[in-house]
Every structure is written in structure tokens, then in C-alpha cells.
Amino acid sequence: MATQVSTLTSSPQPWIYKAGWDLRWLIGSSLVVPIVLLFVWMGSSSTSINLGITALIGGPHLFATFTATWFDPRFRRHHLWLLVPITLVIPAIVVFLGLNHLQVLLSIFIFSASLHVLHQNIYITDIYRKKLAVEKGWWPRLIDYGVMLLCIYPIASYKLVHGQFMLGSIEILLPPIMKHPATYWLVWIGFSFFLSAWLVKTYGEWKRGELNVPKTILISSTILICFWVPIAASGTRLELAFQSVNAWHSIQYLGIVWYIQAVRRKEGFIQNPLMQRMTGAGKRNVLVFYGFCFLTTMGLLAVALLLPMWNPLSLTGENMHQQYYYMLVLSPLLIHYALDGYFFTVANHGAPDPELEPFTAPRSMNLDEIPEERFERVRA
Image (cartoon, rainbow, N blue to C red; front, side, top):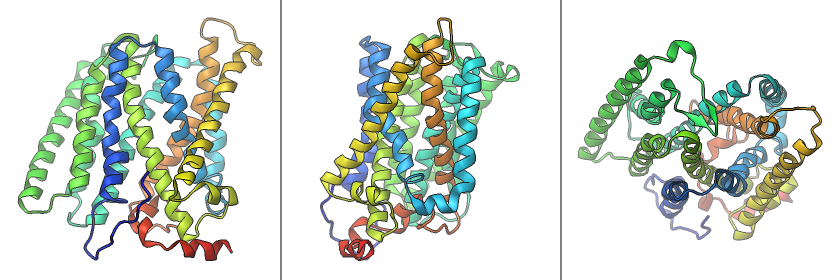
């Protein structure tokens, strides 16, 4: 996460922070996908891949959300209507399904995770769109949304319909009415339509000299990766292929939340003294921010390891360890999905207040334009 100060000009620049940073953390981080897939193809164990990605980036990206929500007094005051129901209801549903319908819980998780990954990239492309402000009307956004929302499902839907989509040894379910070839044919038709429209639109933007370069690169990367990953593995190894997408998504998220919090700190929006010390543009701040999220992840994994030994719910059967693990891990994960679903939706629509809606910060401010002394005055 670079800290050098760039030379500012009056001309609009399309990058969220700066070209080098965006290309490393939001777009170039997609190179982690083939690296993870290489481990999958080499036969690395499911445990090593799943726990490795969860410990290093998946868990930290999850807990980064809470630095901008529960750890932000201003956000808590204005969003209790959102935080309290989500925090209470989602774990209750997860525990109920984990105890009684584990297959249903994992199916809900897979669909939520795929939408969450795509929604995040839509959110980032919306930032790029607003920073350059050359697109007119609603149809360019609709085409971008359509091709991104469908790109992961053409091959995945075929596997789902034929009972070939697994999370470990557990088959992911579709509603009975969708277990029909018409499902994946409709997905293919929709994806083909939006992909064709997007290619035509992009070519027209290039011809007119209006091409939004970072947005186009990100959408291209998303389409390419998400379309092909479902075919990269099969059977019980399929979930590992999707971990490669999760790894990219998590790196992006850690980068964007770090940037958001660094901007908000300089603007004086962060009131929590702990978060003030953790956030900022220096390397030390970056390490502290990541270290906090990493150590929190280690705590969660330690509890997940010890809980089956304690067995407070007196569970029995071969799925006992899975039940405890998924109930413990999916509760904060689905809270994270719900909060980000709200953030990603409101941040780039209308005129949200950046003091109250933290994910608006990247489009409305530039980290290098905000003098550090502004934060010093607020802190004093």
C-alpha cells in the first residue's frame, strides 16, 4: 500500500488513489488466482488451501469491515437500526440452519459469497465511473452490471443443475424448480447478450476517446476470471478453485478499506482512538491495521478448533466438526456480507454523507490532497 505523494493536477484522474496503487491492489492482485489454482492442480490438501487463505487474507478482510462499523462511534449512533438486527438475526439463522439443515446453510453461503464478490467489483467500477464522469444515461451502467453479475454463473449453473457443484463433500442445492436445463440455457443467453453489448459499448467508448481505462481493465479481469474458475476443478476440489477468487476479492477489500480509513482519518471522521492509531498512510499504520485483523482471525480460528473439543451443544455424528466450524465462521461472514451489501449499494448512488457512509470516501476525496495537519487539529 504505497505512501509516496503524487503530483496533483487539475485534470480529472480516473484512479481511486493512483495508477500504481490501483493496479497493484485492486486489479493486479488478480494474479493470485492462477497461483492458488496452481496449488489446487498440484494436489495441495483442502485443509492447507482453505486455512491458509482464511488465515492470511480471508479472515482479515472479514474483520476489516468491523473497523468501519462497530468500531466507529459515529457509524454506530446513526446505524443502530442496521447493525443491531443484522448482528442478532444472522447468527440466529446460521446456528439454526447449522444444527438442522447444514446443506441449506452452505448453499445460502455459496450464493451469497458469489454475489458479494461481484457486488464488490461493481462498487469499485462505480467509483471509477464517477471519478471520470464521461458516461451518460443509465444503459452503460446496466450493461456493466449485467455482464459482471452473470459472468460467474454460465458454467457454475450447469454444474448446479447436474448436482456437480460441491462444497467439500456436500452438494450445493438449487430450488427444485431450477433443477432443469432451462436454467443454465437462460443464464447462457443472458450472459451472451450482456457480454456482446459490453464489447460493442467498450469499442464505441474507445473510438470516441471516452474509454474509462481502469474500469474496463477491472471488468475484463472479472469476466475472464469468474467465467473460467468454475471449470478449473470438479467434485470435492471445486471449492478450492473458488478460494482463488476469494483470495483476489479479499486482497482488493483489504486495500480499499485501508484506503477508506486512511482518508477518513485525515478528514477527522474517525473518532475511535484505537482506529486513529491503526489507520493512516504510513507503513507502520498499514502493518498495525493488517495485524489487528489478522490477530482477530487467529482468535476466531482458535475458538473454531477448540469448540468441537468442548462440544457445548452435545453434537454427535460425522458432521459435528463441520457444524461448529460453519456456525462460528459463517455468522460474522454473513454479517460482513450484509453490511457490505448496504455499503456497496448506497455509497455511489444519490448524495450520501461521507461522514456517515464510510464507503463514499474514495470517490469524494483524494488521500494525497488532504494535509496531515487537518487530522492533527481534529485530534487536538
